[in-house]
Structure formats: structure tokens, C-alpha cells
Amino acid sequence: MDYLLTEEQVMLRDLARQVAQEKVKPVAAHYDETEEFAWEIVKIYAQSDLFGIYLPEEYGGMGGGVLELAICTEELSRACGSIALSLAATALGTFPILLYGNPDQKKKYLPDLAAGKRLAAFALTEAEAGSDAGNIKTTAKKDGDHYILNGTKQWITNAGEAEVYTVVAITDKKKGARGASTFIVEKGTKGMEFGKKEKKMGIRCSATREVIFTDCKIPKENLLAREGMGFIVAMKTFDQSRPGVAAQAVGIAQGALDVALDYSKKRIQFGKPISSFQGIQFMLADMAMQIEAARALIYASARMIDSGAKNIAKDSAMSKCFASDVAMKVTTDAVQILGGYGYMRDYPAEKFMRDAKITQIYEGTNQIQRGVIAANMIKESLKG
Image: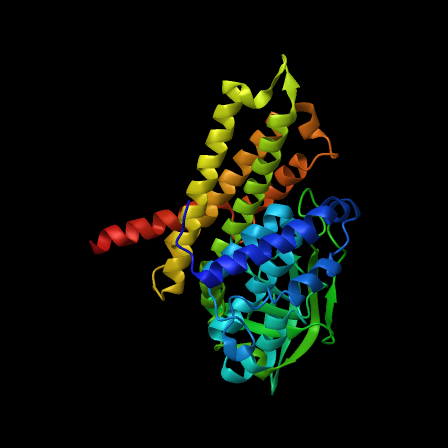
């Protein structure tokens, strides 16, 4: 479909597609097998100016928005959703600074993040605070001109590789979720350590680790917004970032469809390519329709966010929830079309299926997304 992209957006899409197909696709299986963080490709992303596409020009970015980020993430994920996550997760860790950072904080951190010189990570999740994000236990206690952080964050994407972390911690236990605050913590700060790299079902080369704070002392200037704003910062960040997860999901789905379509034309059964069989044709048609519908929802949501609309939570959640469900369905069907070969690691279909699953889980499970959607629908109906 023609989404009426601008000339600049088409150029960005074509650049990201070229990087994905020429640089990422040939090494995707290697990094999935070794589970190494793909620094070689991260450097190529940086050289191609992809890290700054959604950041203001005054900080070295390209001045784009969520739509540009979605376009880029989709194309990179079409080759490998795991390696693409190094960029997408950096955006997640950067959004709190972009949205709530003061001029000094933005000037200090955004230029390096835009240039890809440093990666970022967002540290919210804990052992007892996954879907229940308001149940975080990590604390930040004011001590003169500093805050002292104690606690452990779990399943943090880019952890150990990133150098800039936006961390949500409790500054006032009596206020519950309203007592949370967000801080910028730099890698190398005394009292900050990382757990082992987790071994995962999918997105295997992406780094997922615990981030452990033990009397970690950070300057008060690293507080984002003000005390008590932590939960709002986190939720507003997700409103901006969820179309990026949706784009990752659509990219993975599109990559799987590419593989399935190509295979269906080459695989001969009963003397014909299986693409000539109606059963396969219907599957391919459904996969294509689902992907296009998800893409249209993502682009519409991203455009609404970039327009400055205030009530974006519902649409952002819809795009993430729908696209990730589509990714799981399409990748499962791709494996089915490839049959026994689809189950073999010699073919990329099974990797797309493994990588797709996480998109239904992180940045809020799809059950949480449905709760956000319904809550906003009910709220809107009461106003009407």
C-alpha cells in the first residue's frame, strides 16, 4: 500500500532496507547461534545515522519522529529482530530524556545517543514488578546533593552494553506508585553491576541482564522531571515507544512471509510448486492482509503521536497488541508452509517465530495492552 510517505521517509526506508539486506541478513543466523551482541552491526547503524532519526536536529538527530523510528525498525527487523533491538531499545531508554529531560540533561546525553556513540536502556521491570509496574522495590534515597540507589532490575534489554540507563526507583514509599522517580545512571557508576547475560528462546543476541544497584550514588542533577513523576515518565515513554515494538513485530512477520513465499515457489510436491495449491495461497493471502493491516495501524498511530495529540495511550497500545499478535500468527504459518524445513535451524523461519514471541510480552504484555485499550474506551464513553 502507498502510505504517502515523504521523500525523506522513503529515503530512510530504502537506506534501512539496504543496511538490513546487505549487512544484517547475511550474519543474522551467526549472531543467533553465538548469542554475541552484534557490535559490528551496531557500528554500521551508527555510520548510517540511524540512531538519531527520531531526535531533534539541535542534538544531532534527523528531526524525525515516531513514524520514522517505526519505518526504520520495521526494515531492520525484517532481516533480524534481535539485532534491530539494539537500536529500538536505545530509543526506549532515550525517550524519558527526550520527553522529560531539562536542557542540560538533553545537551549532555542526546548528541552521543543520536550518533550511536552510546547505547541506552530503560530499567523499570523487577522480579515482582512486571505487569504490576507500580510494585517496584528499587529505592532512591536523597542524601545531600546525591541519591543512593538500592535494588535490582530484571530482564533489561541492552543491559551491560548500554552506557546510559533511565531507571525508575521509589523515592517515597508511603505514596506507592506516586512515590516513584526516574533517574539517569551512567554505566561505570560505583555500586552499579550487571547480572549474567540471560539465555533466551528468541532475540538471542540481544543483551538481557539484571541491573543491580548497591548503595549506588548518583548526583541529584540526574533526576528526570521531579520526584514523584517516575510512573508518569514510564507510562508516557511507553506511549511513544510501543509503536516501535509494533514495527519490530511487523518487520519480523514480513521477513517470515518473504521466506514462506519464496519457499512456496521453489518447493515441488505432486509435480507442482506448492504456491499453486489453494490451501497455501489462502495462507499467504491471510498473512499478507494481517501484516498490511498491522502496518496501517502502526503508521496511523505513529502519525497521531507525532502530531502532538494528547490521548495516545489507547492507539499506541492497539498498534503494539495487534501487530505482535499478527507476528506470532504469521511466523507460525510460515513455519507450517515450510513444513519439516521450517522446524530446522538451517532455515530462518523458526528464528522469526522465536523472535516474534517476545513482542507479545515486553513493554507490557498483550493482556496489559488490552486492559489499557478497554480502560481508555470506558473513560471516553463516560465523557461522551
